Image (cartoon, rainbow, N blue to C red; front, side, top):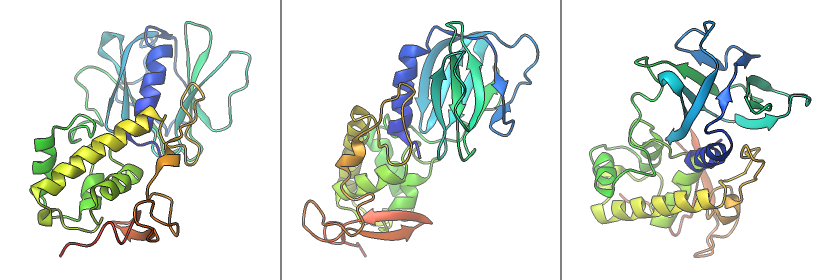
Length: 270
């Protein structure tokens, strides 16, 4: 579930607690989750953490000697800390003992999440991603959508076009911009796309400020539960009245993804 705002909240939390620390080792309990472009030969660890970055839904941990840990949380992945004398939580697949004495753990009940250890000049899962949704300039956003004739909701979710937008925030951005999710992108005028860019920026920043959306089991490494789900205008509100017009929020499937919208505020464009 973690989309851009949730991953950014993880980055902010770990930047305070992990930057400058040393990963002493890497203990892998489920090999499928950990993908090392460079084999874990003796001598790779320990590695100090220089900084944490993010691109789209990927968390990037920059380590010394040019190494990167690239993390994709997928549906249920999350980090948490435990002390040496504490038992690890169920579904913990990777552990990084730290020089501080505690342990950074990666937990993922559904085991869809992935962590890559990448050395210098090695292929990265970040290759092929579009511009980050939080950093993309307005003109680039508009041109990226106009040059493709596709339904707007699946287009927003295409990570090669714009990285980071997920189901929740695509629905919320389209609702604020008053755009029906099945509208062909080529039918939208620049003024409408400009509004979509503006509202997507607002939605993403507001979600980060509220700690993300904790709809299922998302919790930051510091144990903070997000509250942005309380501000959702359409997502997860099927059958409830629209806060703007009173019409009943509907749910349809667009591009194999459950999609929430207001039939009165977001009228189709033909």
